[in-house]
Length: 111
Length: 114
Image (cartoon, chains in turn red, purple):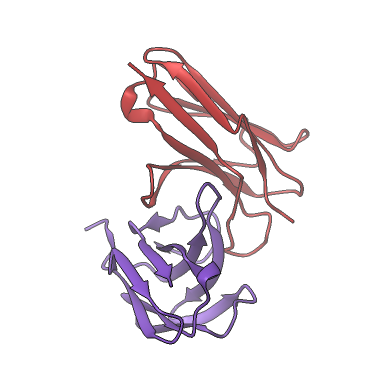
């Protein structure tokens, strides 16, 4: 399977803390994307990082990519209760316009 | 308009029923997708339409039949489903057909097969 693995599977933190989740994949990629999914809803695109990029920022989000280790991390700084959601990485490892999603990390931010 | 809409939001159907899921976008996107998502699992790709033509079928059983009537609409026709087909069905679209484009997702249709 091309599916990426994410860890941790679940993460619970206090509001204001930082949250880090990791994604590992198996084959070479051209780009990696991160998506957020609120409970039982559609996914929302957060950020895309290309294989020739090492780090990218968007607001409170910081994404890193290490193609030698086939891994990526998503850091959410100063978390808020509204960040409570599932986070998925997705790669083009399957080829073409096919996205393959990782197993996901369930983040809970408590007040 | 940066929205993908899906109808219905919820659907309960028997194993002998025929029903359809609908998806619509008005962003001028040329690729549209159907995903199936089981609880606490990632979305799994079912079909991809590029420029209104079916470009990817992930070996989906024939009881699921996709249709793209025009560049804004995507349907998923359901017939003789099994209880294990109960899931959240997500539609998505993207501007282009490469995986470098972000995908915009609809809110999904929660399907229960009884």
